[in-house]
Length: 606
Image (cartoon, rainbow, N blue to C red; front, side, top):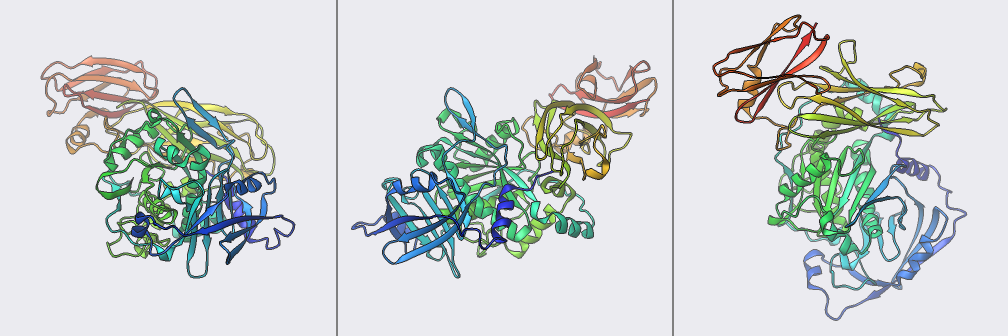
């Protein structure tokens, strides 16, 4: 469950308060137009026309040091153009956001970097020496950004201004989605329930995004604050695109900013799909140290073949919820690039090569999704999984973090959760529990695998729970769910609660970390027979005839404890296990072959 994003609150406040800025001071930024004797040839390939300016960046300090969150800003572009802007400081990050600063000797968390982001008549990001602006007009959008992001040799004082109509399409650079197995089809709720959900919660459907930036991004932008101000500018516009089309936006869960080459834990492969794979492994291993629904790596290490970005299709809110983007162009195209790769995560395919929409395979600057993409993404976000993943409530809510960590080809997996009090008053201490279920309904047949107490929470406070671990087999059983119940101890009145059950379809992984097992393994698993099941005294394990050599057999409980190990003799077809003295419950039999594969089935001891 999600709390209403501060970004969305501010946005709604801005729209409903036309007189908001009556008492604010006016700031001025003066850009001086310049004409270069030898213009940069690289720009001729990107733009039909553009204007260059210089800015004395010392002017930016006045805005950074202004304690007011609401300002009037006048942009003076040369002698003729003046843009009066009413702006409000925007903070759409999670209140508990920590920025991870990775250096050679340590990983430091902070939320105290000097930069500001505004929205209103325009979207503006400011640091001590950088200024980014996105100004929508009636028939075009004006962009202003540092020239050195396009021309590294340019001085810090140079800025470029252009409109979306000035951009030249480049068919030689393109975006892709990864070839990982597509996300499983999930049943949707009743259409009337979907409509009701949108009516009650349309302003608080939020996807929490974790963002990483590599060492070259840090070097090129010159500081951590500059990197984040730039990415904030992009994400604000991407969030608005998704709000306009799908009634949900994005909230930053965490940033990971690398300032050393060895801090790039996702390798340096020039193949986009390999970099994406390595980034995924790092993220799945807990690299972000924060829960997230989706994640993006921004890089300045280019990819082969003109690829600008890549993502796993249909994997939002699932284990492979990752994408990578190459920042090789200006703000306008990078907004579209990010929206495109996130579109793949939410199950959109590429449009045709002549499309004029976001999902066009080659890089463009569109801010519109095609009807085909809208249908694909809308269908996906209205599945039970994503409605739960993106939803928020107004009462005591369980925030499902879906951070399922793969420790080994088989072994312990951990669920990290948060409970947040979104009600109108304080709540006493409660208990959060994790169950394993073979369906999405919590009932008496489900297995309690861990509980932790939640302290008393004031309004808006949250508590993070970690280390609820349990054992699951990697193959065989494919329909397990983790059911996480907030206030399982029923300390809060039911009338004050709203949907405190989070459902997580559990993702199984093989040694490569992908979600797929080959057909031969599935066939073997399907023919690994346990009988009788349920069992009271002696369990018979029938070994599939395809198994060669002498396999070993393990029996484990739901907490991963090894209860029995036995090596089958050659030509054995059945192994018997006396379980008469074992406690009632669910157990797992794992068959390990000589070739190194594992096949697992469950049984119930009465």
